[in-house]
Amino acid sequence: MNSEEEFYDAETGLESDDSCEVSFKDAPVYEGKQTSNGRVPSENGVWERRTTLPAPMFSRNDFSIWGFLKKCIGMELSKITMPVVFNEPLSFLQRITEYMEHAYLIHKACTMSDSIERMQLVAAFAVSAVASQWDRTGKPFNPLLGETYELTREDESYRLISEQVSHHPPISAFFAESLSQDFVFHGSIYPKLKFWGKSVEAEPKGTMTLELSKHKEAYTWTNPMCCVHNVILGKLWIEQYGTVEIVNHSTGDKCVLNFKPCGMFGKELHRVEGHIQDKNKKKRRVIYGKWTECLYTIEPKVYEANKKAEKKNGDTKKHKQVSFVYSREQNTGGAVDADEMPDVQETVTMIPGSTLQWRIAPRPAHSAQMYNFTSFAMTLNELEPGMEGVIAPTDCRLRPDIRAMENGDIDTASQEKERLEEKQRAARRERAKDGEDWSTRWFHQGVNPYTGTSDWVYTGGYFDRKYSDLPDIY
Image (cartoon, rainbow, N blue to C red; front, side):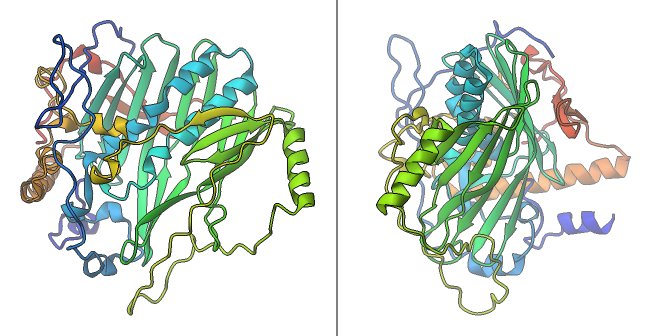
C-alpha cells in the first residue's frame, strides 16, 4: 500500500467520506405527494411531487466544528470525513441535478432565431444553476464510487443520469438530454474544497457543455467559486465570486460574467455583471442582476447612458472596496472572529429598456426548517411506490444514511454512513489485492470536442434498465 492509500484508509477521522442514443418513450416518470413521510395523498390515482421533507432539520447549535476543523486548515475537505450533523440529506449527485431547476431557459433558447438572444438565455441558465446554493450551508453527502442518480421530468421535457466516476479525486459526471432531442447538457465536476480558518472555499473544477441540436451550437463554461463564511463562529453565509466565460463555439460569440465578491461594505453582495460580445468582440448586450434574485440584459449604449446619469445626479457613491473573500487567516491558534454578513442591499433596480431574462422562484415558506431547500430540491430524494426495482440499485435514493437523515434519525444516519465508508474501503482493498482496477459503467474518459480538454463522456444505455452486474455498494 502506498502512502496515499494509507492516508485515505487511515481511521483517524481524516479519511475520505467516500466522497448512447436511446429512445425516451419508455422512460418511467414518478410524481409524488406527502403524508407522514412528506407526501400528500394521491388524487384520482395520480401522485404529485412532495412539497416538504418527512422531518425538519435538527439544530446544529449543540455541535462545535472548531475542534474538528482546526486540524484541517489548508487541506482539501473532500479528503476529510465530516460528522453527519453538518450534512444535508442529499448526495452531491442530487445537488448537481439542481442545475436543471430552470431548464425552461434552455428550451426557450432553442426557439430563438438570433444567436445573441440565445446567448442571453444560456447566460441566464448558467447563473440560475448556482442560485439554489443561496443559504444552503449543509454539506451534501459525498457520493460512493459507482453511485448513480437518475431524474426524468416529462413536464420539463428532459431526463438526466449521473455517476460517481472517481473517488480520489472525487469526480461526478452527468448527462441530461431533452425528451424532444432539442438539447444535450453534460459535464463533470471535481468539487475542490479547502478550509481557511473562518471560511470554506469551494472550487467546482470541471466544464459544463450545452449543445443546442437545432442550431448546431455548443456552449461551454465553468462555474464560479463559492465561499461559506463563519463555519466556526457567527451566522453562516455564502457568496459566489469569479469570472465565468461562456463561449459559443459555433458562432464565436462570448459572454463574460463577473460574480462580484462582497467587499467590506457589502454593496456588491450577490451581484453579477457582464456583457455579451460577438465574434468581432463588439459588445452586443450588457448583463446585470443578482444570482440570488434575477438577471437582466440591456443595450450597451442605454446602460452606459444610465450610469453617466446616475453619476451626474450623485446617486452612486464610491467606496473603497476591501475584499476579504480571498484572505486566508494565518494565525488560527487563538480566538476566531466572525466575518459579519453585510446587510443585503436593495433589490436589483431595473434600468429602463432592460429585458428580464430570469427570476428566481420563491422558496417554500418552511424552507428554513428544511435545510433551506428549494421546492425542486425537496423532490430529489423522494422514493415513489414502484420506483424501487426499476431504478438502478446504485441510485442514491436507496442510500440508507441519506434516507435516515431525511427521516430525522441522525444516529442511524451516522452509523450507516460509517458502515458504507468502511464497505467502500474494504472493496478498494480487495480490488488492490486482486490487481483489479475500478471500471465505470455509464461514463468513460474522453476528450471534450469543443475545448480539447479531458472530460467524462456518457457511454449510453442506462435507460435500457440492464443492471444485473452493478456492484453492491449499499
